[in-house]
Image (cartoon, rainbow, N blue to C red):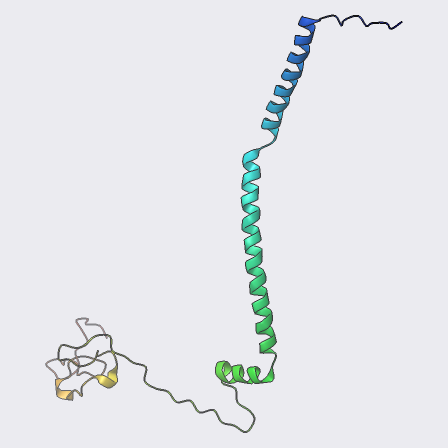
Amino acid sequence: MASARPPAPDHGPLRLRGWLVILGGAATAAVILTAWLPVGALIAQHAALSAASSRLSQLSAEGVALTAEEARLQTPAVIDQLAREQYQLVEPGQRLVQVLTPSFRPTSQRADGGPFPGDPGYAPVVDPADATSGPHAPRPTSSRGQPDRGTSRGC
């Protein structure tokens, strides 16, 4: 004969208490994970990681360019060119001739329309009798015909 199982007893309050314990444990776990797992720090670290990654790719491109420049600078023709341009070096038996061009460009004009008087080459010729200042201008003389040395009496 087949034995029939008796129906399971209904443990209403016990069953509800079990579910409350499980829900309480899940809520506690969620609070602990939220407190210990700093989401803001993870987002900041992700941004820093992407910035570092872009900087790395930029530096890698610069490294490739510098490697190409290094290879170019190893050729004798480029070395000779740089020695001539930057250090004014010449081959044995050659002479270096530098042609200096005037680089003066006046930035303002005089009242009479001439260039700025800062360059003495552009200054007009001055008659020595009209010269009243400068290192070679005549000094005032005393009544005795000697240069006036000021008001001090001691010699």
